[in-house]
Image 1: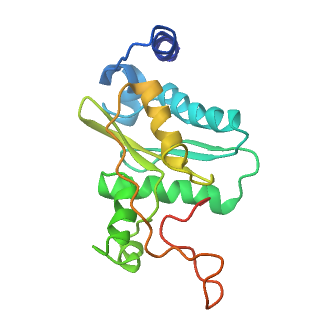
Image 2: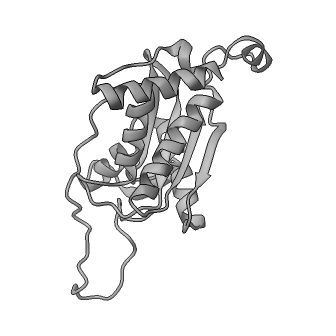
Length: 210
């Protein structure tokens, strides 16, 4: 409870005072008997995961959108899983795929998407490695310690103003403090316009609303 109140107070101070803040590792990990029970000293606590996940869900709701959010700890255990209104199975699963991609690579899931878009790697290879070439997954790191990943899915992407990734980035910033800049939004060479010949095709890497 004390940790949750501290997180809320930190967010409020930032919003009202316009100043930046950054939590320390001890603010966001399980301690005492709970840490002893799981035999892990650097595991993200429930209050922090909940604050991050709910921030993204609430920000999306304020824009009239539903969103799916999953937070994994550094071992891949689900710590928070939330589904907004209007979210289907593919939306909730894509959030999990994105978070798992971060867990595997220790990098934003957009890095896989950009690698496919630049031709550095094929999407089939990304899939073979168990990753998802789409933006929306971000590492959760405090004081240099990797604590897990957030995966966000289910909203149409309109970068640089709004996307699954921006929702997750805003949540991490609000709860944990300043975050690394997002990777660039590269043009999609696989995009197919409605008037293209040849009929329908599979969604390109980074297609919206996944």
